[in-house]
Image (cartoon, rainbow over all chains, first blue to last red; front, side, top):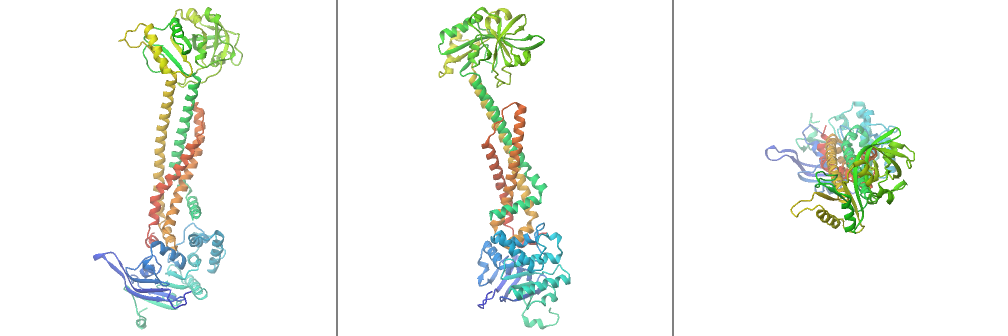
Length: 238
Length: 401
């Protein structure tokens, strides 16, 4: 999407501190990270390594304490809460470990949600939502509610919801964390397909090296810092 | 955007039908109570107002004894026919002067008997009350002068003694005298004090005094002041005249009273209106309580749906969109409560009106106000929970279990 050399995502010396004074906890300690359009990046690291905090910042749900986050060249830390919401609405798609679909709401209605906020007409919403549902291989399941779907199917609906707005970046937080191996592979195939065929940039947090293997690049977090790539050659580092 | 919020709200309400119903119950009752109170109050006021007209305009009532509120007072010498004659002679502003003497007694016709109020008076009795014979006639001068055994009866007496038959020409028995029915009065219905105005028999005053009471007493004098002249002024003049005739010194208080019937009725009207306003206010408090109920449920709903709100915010909902969603939900809930309340109120009002014997007066204004008020209650009490929802941190909200 952005082919003039500007990275879609660029973190410059981003740090994040929670709490104040003695209770202060530094989750990120000055991260530099740059992701180009069309990349599929896996983010790995132990819990507490700062990868979730980083994902929240990348998703414009949170802002850095110091440093700068440039999304398509725009400094996110200078945006208001509503401006960040508009940015999420137009350019970002979210996939969560816990699916986070609305209960008692049909698959189609779940997928339509971001289009409703974008102000699309009902007809266009239905069309795009059906298309997105078909893209994740769930054509015919439009009227099912999350309770009637398996975990893998729910996650596929969640992916459809994330891509229905044709976002520039898809942020996936352990999308296969709650799924068995076969379902996980299905999800990964869909993500890979979206990345390759639609050129959607994907940033995915995962614990599993098997899943990270689908990505074109892996970024490791440790103690609030990104581990330089040459250190990854050390045995046991993954 | 508003339309979307509306459809979202409808979906949410349908999801929790029972809870939604219980939530709006307070509003339903509040709205219904306000409308019922105001409608019935309006009916009662209308009834009193109609009776002002039926009383005859500018009617004054002179009774012996001190003023003891509406109705006859006791404890002083009665009037005489001469008093009435003096009023006619000295006060040209009076268009009618009706001396009256009454007694409750049993009337008999054939096998039927009925206890009613028998009043001796003149034709001015009908004039003062704006009353005319629906059938037959009223007294002639010679009948009045001679104290003839003739009578004019009210609709209730006719119903009790004659059923639906024509009573004119029949002879009914009043204690020891037999008396010919010459006229039937038009129906007047209930008075503002709740008594049946049609339950009466009128005979010439002289006949009453000679044949029934056996004395020359006049218990009440009712007079009618000429249209356009001040009843207050007439009241003062009558008091002055009566004091003279009853030989009262300057130090003595009146041993009679002159009451302006219109004023009494007006007092009753304002009492009814004050009562209506008071009951309406009490009912309005229940609307307020209903609003608090809505706020409570909306707060519960926001907490329950924290995760959903987190999802919406993450997906890109603006603060004001979440605010609007919850605000619209509260407003839809409460205005729906308002609608149900209106229906309930109209059904109840019609039922109660016929039960309490007051006319049903549809008051579109109060229905409209009650509806708008119920919607406003939703907006006011829904604002705080909605604001709370809109202000949630999406990260925290998504983590919420």
